[in-house]
Amino acid sequence: MTDTPPIHIIGGGLAGSEAAWQAAQAGVPVILHEMRPLKETEAHRTDSLAELVCSNSLRSDDSDYNAVGLLHDEMRRCRSLIMASADAHQVPAGGALAVDRNGFSEAVTQALQKHPLISVVREEIRALPDLSPQWDSVIIATGPLTSAPLAESISKVTGVESLSFFDAIAPIVHRESIDMSKAWMQSRYDKVGPGGTGSDYINCAMNKEQYENFVRELIAAPKTEFKEWEKHTPYFDGCLPIEVMAERGIDTLRHGPMKPVGLTNPHTAPPQDADGKRKFSRSYAVVQLRQDNALGTLYNLVGFQTKMKYADQTRVFRMIPGLENAEFARLGGLHRNTFLNSPMLLDAQLRLKSRPHIRFAGQVTGVEGYVESAAMGLLAGLFAASERKGETRDRPPRTTALGALLAHITGEANAETFQPMNVNFGLFPPIAEGKGGRDRKLLYTQRAKKDFGAWLGI
Image (cartoon, rainbow, N blue to C red; front, side):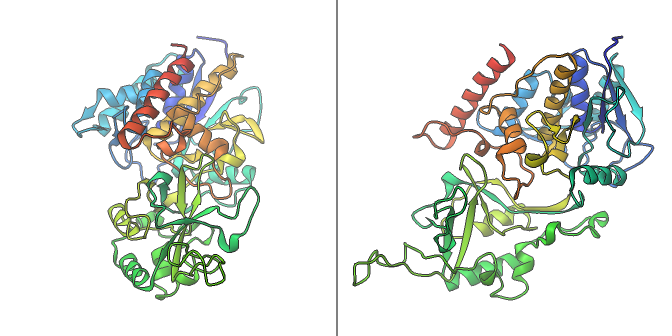
C-alpha cells in the first residue's frame, strides 16, 4: 500500500466507477462511497456498481463516422474500465455497443473491489465535505438520482435553488443542415445586443395554413409519460413544453415563441418598393433558432421544449420551412434531472470554483448518456490523480471527443441557457470547408485520433 492520502469518490455509478479506476491505475488510493444497498433509489434494482438503469446500449461503436463511437475509441485508449467491461459483455446490436447489463455491472464491481488501491465503502454521504487533511480531494459523481440531503448541500454551496426538476429540453439542429434559401438571419427588431450584429437568429417563417397544420400535429403527436416517482417534480423555471402551450389555443404559439413581430421575411416580397427602398413582408408565424455554441455549428429552436417522442419530433419539426432536412444534434426531452450549471460553477479541470478540493463528474456536470457520464469520470479521475501526485495534466485537445465535451460543459456553453448535451460533431472546431456528409465526419474523426494520440504521448 502507499502512504499517499486517498481520493474520496462519492457515487458508484458509471462516472464514479471510472474515476476510481483511473485514479487507482495511476497509483493513487481511492475510497469509493456508495449508498446502495443501505439507501435505495427509485430507479436502481441491484447493489452493483455501474448499474445500467435504463437502456443497455452505449450507442454507436463506429469511431470513423460517429461522435460517440469516437468517444468509445478515446476511452479505450485510456484503458477505461467501463469500456473494457462493455466489450467483455457485449450482446448483438448491429453497429451499436450493447451489453448484458448484469454481467457488465458485475464485472465493474469485481474489478473495483479487487483493486489493491480501492476501498468500496457502503454509506451515504449527506453533505459536501469541508476541506480537511482527510478530505482534501473529493469527486462527486452521484448522477441524476443524488440523495436529497446531498442535493440540498450542493444547492446551498452553489446557490442553485433546487437540483431536482423537470428538464424540458429544446431540440438542437446542425447549422449546415438548415435550408437558408427559405430561412434568414435577423434579430427581432434588428436589435444589437452584447456581441451581436442585429442578425443573430435564424428565422423560419410559416403562412397560416402551415402554422395551423403544425399546431395540429404538435397536439396529436404521442408524448412521453411521467414515471410515478416523477409526477410531483415541478417544471424547471416554469418552463412549459411547446405542445402544452399549443393546447391552450390555436393562436397561443403565435403570441409566444412563434410570434412574428419585429421580423421581416426577405424571401416573400420584392427586394425594393416603388421608391427603391428595400421592402420585406411580415410572416404569419416565425420559428427562431439561436446559436447554441461558440463555434456557431449548433442552433437550438427557441422556446421549443417538448415531451413528444423522438420519432415524432423529427417528423413534426421537419414540417417547419427550412428544416425539411434538419439534422438534430439533440432532440427535445422532458425528465427529472439533477445537474449543475457547469459553465458557471466548474473550472477547466472539473473543480468547483468556490471549493477547488471538490470535483464533479458524470451526468451531474451536464452531460447526457452513459458514455459521456463515464467519460467525465475518466477525466476527473485523471485530473485528481495528477494533482495528488504533484503533476500537471493538460486537458485533452478541443479537437477530440473528450476535449470537445469537456470544453462545452466548462465554459463554451452559454451559462444562461445551459442544458445537458450528448457528444456530437457540432461541439468540435469546424473542419475544412468543401466537405459534407460522411466525408466531413471522417475528417473530424481522423483529426481527433491524431490529436488524441499526441495528447497521450503516442
